[in-house]
Image (tube, rainbow, N blue to C red; front, side, top):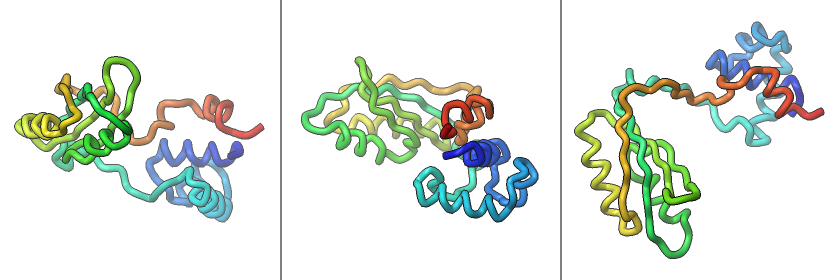
Length: 161
């Protein structure tokens, strides 16, 4: 990736759009070049899709639960991770080091659904226990991580010399 690619990805993250016209207005990169570069970034696997971000509160999935999951298993952690990830409402699963084996984020429609969520975890034989934290208010919850970086940092860290 070069400087133009990084500038383009930062603009997409900040503006929440892949519209070549809007990106041109923000970056001064020609529209035809934006099309070309976005296609290349897709081919390279950097850009995965063209999905729209959703406001989960407005959609009706405003309850967030963060869980630590402690497990006992033989074989691959990936198999246990798949079982955990398949639980309805789980949106993120992380395999971690230390006492906690997995960190999980779930988005649910109602606080009453937390009991069902915990029951689903308890139904997995490899899960020993969970520590659940009910989120009262989300301070930062972005589907676009590049928003949390300055353009200068992204150029320094990601652009080829």
